[in-house]
Amino acid sequence: MKQVITQKRGLTFNKLLLLVVFMLAFVGLHAQTAQDFERHVKILAADSLEGRGLGTKGHALAHEYLVGQFREIGLSTWFDNYTQDFAFKQSITWTAGKNIVGYVEGTDPKLKDEYIVIGGHYDHVGYEMGSDGKKVIYPGADDNASGTAMTIELARYFAKEENRTKRSIIFILFDAEESGLIGANHFVKESPVPIDQIQLMFSLDMVGMLETNKGLVLKGIGLLEGGADMASSLAANHDIKLKSISSNLERRTDTYPFGQAGIPSAHVFTGLVSPYHKPEDKYDLLEYEGMVKINAFMQAFVAQLGNEQQLEKSSSMDKLAASGIGEGKSRAIRYGATSFIGGSYIDFRDQALRTNSATTLGLGVNSIFRLSSILRLQQDVMVEMNGSQSTDADLEVAPLRRFGVLLPLQLQLVTNEKFSTTERAFISAGAYYRNFFASRLSGEEIPFEADGLNGDEWGLSFGVGFEIQGFMFSSHYRYALTDAFDGPIGTRDRTFGVSLTYLFK
Image (tube, rainbow, N blue to C red):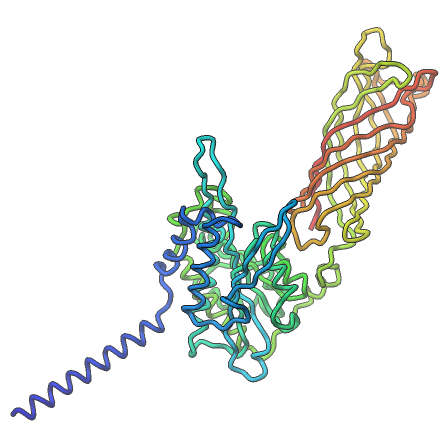
């Protein structure tokens, strides 16, 4: 009887042991939950991290937390403490940046020398001081604590032995993205692996609003041969609507430096539907169940890509390279639409007189020709109305309105002409020609010959401005060298104002 009881107890113990082992195995293999993502985002978007702005204590705390995550996961790395240090100049000061880099080696003896990059930037715009002297913090929950959290959890998944792929996978948390994709640029220039061995790159940037956005953007996946079809098939299995599977390279996130290097690069994105770059971008607004769905989709997608026998660039990638995107070069020619608003007046150069300014308006197109890394030539063609207002009712030169075509040609001295950044400043100088085809004096149309008005005008043009994400804002001053009227008194047109130009992609 005692022996039977002992056997039964032993059997019960063995069952318990098996159950514990099973439970531990299940915990080790469990899929990420909404709580996993929320935990990361809540930490990274906390007020104590001060918006993760460069040079802040909060940025240092974020770096420490993320390095700890990579270490806990057990990723391999080429760098001390997982950190790829770099420095860059902002205005007259040097700023330190820290990419966080780890990798999982592939299982195939040959394919392990090929790499897929998965990354997201962890920096944000920091904080500003309010009028009351208190910090106004920009938490950056969606931008980009969400993409940072997903990069961590994808690394955790693929680091497990049973999930490793034939190709190696590099996981990068980029720094200084908000300053102009600086961290991604640095990694591409100082890659620890031959850059031509990187087959594909994903940038997880703002992935926290799947339901609100009603789908997932996967812009650029068409740069990989068959990538769009593969993504569509897997998305259907994961109940995800893909809103974009184009072959267009996204310039405003960390995909761009990789695309410049000839690497197919896709932006994983749920849209600008969260409070973008605002203090309200907080952790409690994100849709964490949607992040779980995106993460599961990315697990399946990367697993398939990591085990494919061959990954090839699509013809669209070849066209991008041919257009000048590849090898870090900017395009030789860009085109845009431009508008101008300002004022103009007549200067009596032989007397201490000038008329009052009148509104000047212009609308047209332009071309920008790249001459070198710091020089560009801009040619505008603009239909314009200008004129002047008299300071004296007895003067016959005003109120004057002239309508014509303006052709300014300007040489620009620019900063950061390489299109790996989204912002640059410039100064410009050049010459212009105006041809007037109609004029009105005191509201009545007059022929040029009858009143001594000149139909042609030559002059000099000067300007200063900046470009950000395809928009150019600039101020101009135009100084005529020829007279507006025939006669013994010199009369020169002066024009000043601002222009807004959109450069087409």
